[in-house]
Length: 338
Ligand SMILES: [Zn+2]
Ligand SMILES: [Zn+2]
Image (cartoon, rainbow, N blue to C red; front, side, top):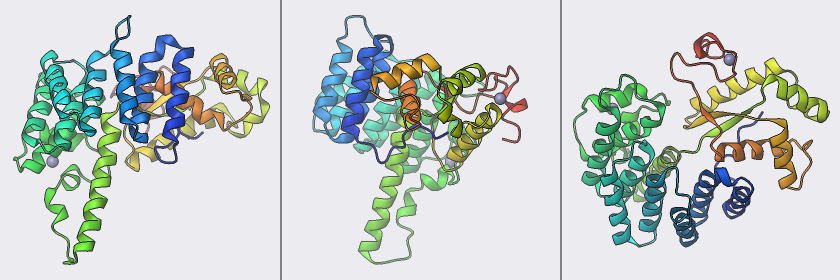
């Protein structure tokens, strides 16, 4: 099984429209879907439309599950197209309300960072860390971007490592170490004196950091679709041609774990597993005007479920149950040898 749509090769305008449509079908998940639709509008370059969507969310009569997140995203988007004063006012507001969710902290700190307000960015990352990580034995996965972002900004400021920086280094499992990735001198230590080479290297680094930052600051997992055993049986009875994708249940599980490990080792952050059900898959196919036998729908279905907030983070926290639902811990089940 493939993960959901990778970030490149996406028609962001079409994806935003699809997510808005889906939000109409699932009003209970509209917030998560519209936040993701707005992210696609931002990526398409249509920032004013993204602002409209954030405003629509913020004025929704039933209130929001996570107002600070939407405000943070709105501020970050506004600043990107010249509305600095409004963005700053919203950022101050987010900091004052001290949200218990790390994502708004990361988003506003990164907005400050990307406009070269490194001191303010560091203070914001640190405020968030103090609030969410004081007296916490093992930082939850969702707080890692807070520690990584703080580490990055402190490297750029030339600050010496403190305990949280050392913690960030130990949590980070990507092939390039955080210290190397965040080393501001890396840009200047090139052998070449040719300004064109230097420029190329700088833009490469910017792109690398940009992609890294973007993936981390948006709480959208790249999710692998998991069919629980009973659902898979039912799916293959109804749509036998999908057996090509899923030769057996055991193999299905093995493939998911292997794909996730591969994505993790290639540096893809925010991974998840999302359980599918036959009725919701059929409803999804109908809403797309397609047949459930069409295997190309499967990744889109996974994306939509993930956008509706149905994915669970992978890998599971130490000692937590395996994502496959066997009832054993991850370490004793699919996490063996991880
Ligand atoms: Zn470090
Ligand atoms: Zn398992």
